[in-house]
Length: 306
Image (cartoon, rainbow, N blue to C red; front, side):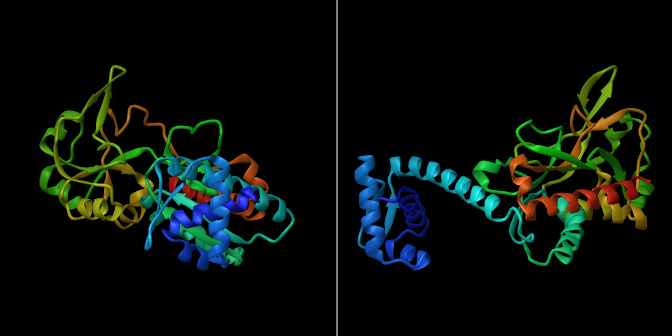
């Protein structure tokens, strides 16, 4: 029995929900799938699938085995891509995971430049704030915010993610411009909701962090929603300057300096990082993408910072 082929067949059947659909996808006879699964189950001594006349479902032990099979097949695919693509022209599907707001404001122009330079690269862009795992999720490159990531991935700093206090000129004209954290009690906040919590504002005083006492206007995880709320004067925002670059340039929003240090985290020295696995850098499509995206984004960051 070809164990890897059997794993591929099993994964496809589990994904398709039927032998016939999996057979069409794999372009093999249904009988071949059936024999392969029977041999695999016989060798394992466990039933991986529940079969009925119309549908196939995965058993409890089958789900455990399925997760491991998917990880093994992804590793095999990466190894094959690394070997076959080592000396080839950069091409193929490039899977990227990025923060939605960052992709909208900064990354999309960089991806346009990447595909203009390397037209054989197909970008598969996933927008997510969730914590991701390269081995589990199968991404080639990721963009995430926060502190310096763990050692098992390569991380290149590409953008300043320090939150800045801002508001529309009309809002400040109506409610006044705060000078200190105490003045924020008379204002409303537009808050960002991260995957696991709302990013409430904090301020630092005598090396201690405390939450800012103020009312909330709106909470959202959508960049467009937050920017629109700020421009329309619903409240004040504490978000990275890159997120509101256009609004700052045209005067729809202005930065509001305070006497104290204010942030959405106790570690305000945070950034946006381009992440990838060290071994994957040898694959041409990943190497050229990392180099081009890193250069483009750092140039944009430097231009805006100046």
